[in-house]
Length: 95
Figure 1 (cartoon, rainbow, N blue to C red):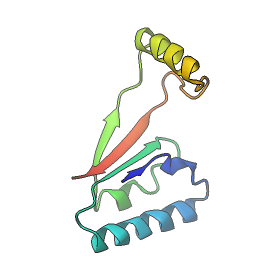
Figure 2: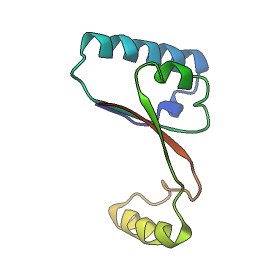
Figure 3: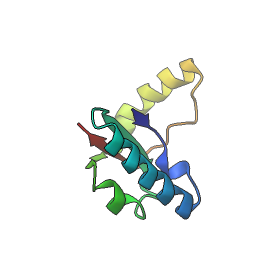
């Protein structure tokens, strides 16, 4: 299962409740594999909850040298403007 954009749950209480419900769901379905992504902003509050059932991985920011070709591909796909240089992302995974 992929949960993308955890930080897009803007209300801190709602984000915390979501993570707690996710933990319960995974306890009921132990064979499910999970990846959760989040920008660093809005992440600190739920990080301790996630580490109870996920490993933390940090993806390095894209260099400008790699960002330009990726942006060109995304522009061709109609995704222009969705990638920003230097945006940090956090990924959690459960294997």
